Structure formats: structure tokens, C-alpha cells
Image 1: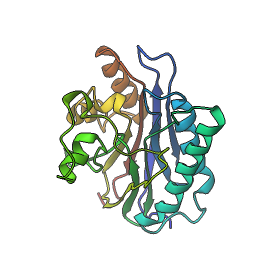
Image 2 (image 1 turned 135 degrees about the vertical axis):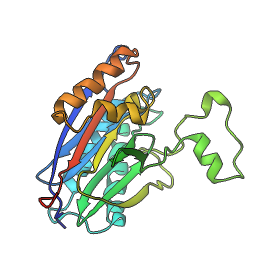
Image 3 (image 1 turned 90 degrees about the vertical axis):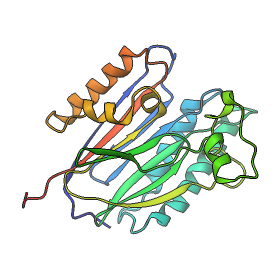
Image 4 (image 1 turned 30 degrees about the horizontal axis):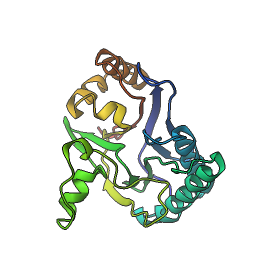
Length: 243
């Protein structure tokens, strides 16, 4: 299903100042209205393989007619998970490989999101920033399920859900209404753990060309040490012709 909203989109990825390789991947396909980021899980081998497998699977499976509701993402996410698991077997990792995936498309006046892990989708509207997604961290999972013990401080940000799992996948599917002049950012945690949400959109000033704003954001991350790969996809819903 196509969107009546006009938009423009751009993306950036950066290895950072510490990591030896970039294990983030992104998709920014305006013709297919498909946007998102994947972050190979640190601490496991083959993070880049995992993120690439996730993105490639979505690209290959995404229907030409688009999606009509958020739940339509389910078979695509299951296929992406299968691809990541299979790639883990192929590269011979006895630990498996894993990736986050936060991906979206436009349908009508809605943003349809599939999300697993701790990459994020942020929305900036009328000067206010909000996070549409919820990190699937051990800490947040314990808050949702009070039968689970609160994790020790050093594990509170550890992922509880990601692609590459053999058991129940359980991603989130979200439909969020959009308005003209909204700005949407898909970002890996190499950005969101380093800069606050308001700081991020201060860099992405609407008066700047989008590519320039993303470059300024990466400059900010570098100023703070850039300890991780940093990747972002910015989608700007254009003002209506009546404005």
C-alpha cells in the first residue's frame, strides 16, 4: 500500500573511533518506501554477517505492493530470523550470531514498524521528540514481567530479544500515525547511547539539508569518543502543499 505523504530520506553509517569493523547495516530505499537499521550484536562473532543477513532478507521478501498493517511484518521478521540463524551455521559459530532490526514503511498516513533489539525509532513532531520503540533490554523485560529478577547493573542493557534466536522471536509491531513535517529517525545504539534525543534532533535541524544534519550528528558522536558503530536513517515527511 503506498503512502499519500510526500517524504525524503537519507542515511549515514560510521565505524566510530574504537571498533575495528562496522557491524551496522541499514536500508534507505525511497522507491520501495523501506527504511531501517540493523546492528550486529557485540560480544558474538559474525555481527556484520548477522546484520547483513537481516537486511538482505527484508529486501528480498518485502512485497512490491508494500504492507497494509503492522502485523504484515511478522512473516518478514520470521524470515529474517531464519536467515540469521542459517548464516550462523554457515560461518561456523557455535555461539550463533545475532542482530537487532528496527525497520519501517509508510502505509496510508501510518508508519508501520517491526522492531527487535535496542536500535530505536524516534519521532520529532512540532519541536517534541519521542521514542516510538522500546529497547528489548534485560532491564525492560524484567519491568514487563515481574516474575523475572531485576538483572545486575552490568547486565541491565544486555539484549533479551534479537534476531538469531532459536526460540520464540517475539518482535514488536507498531503502527504510528504520521503528520506533515514529522521527522523519523532509525538509529543504532552507537548514536542513542551517546547523544540524548533532543541533542540528536538539534543536529538534525529542519533548516539544514538532511545529509548535512546527519554529518553533524556523527561529528557530535565523534566528539564524545564514538565507542561504537553509529548508523542512522532519517525520513522527513514533507509539509503539505496547504501549509
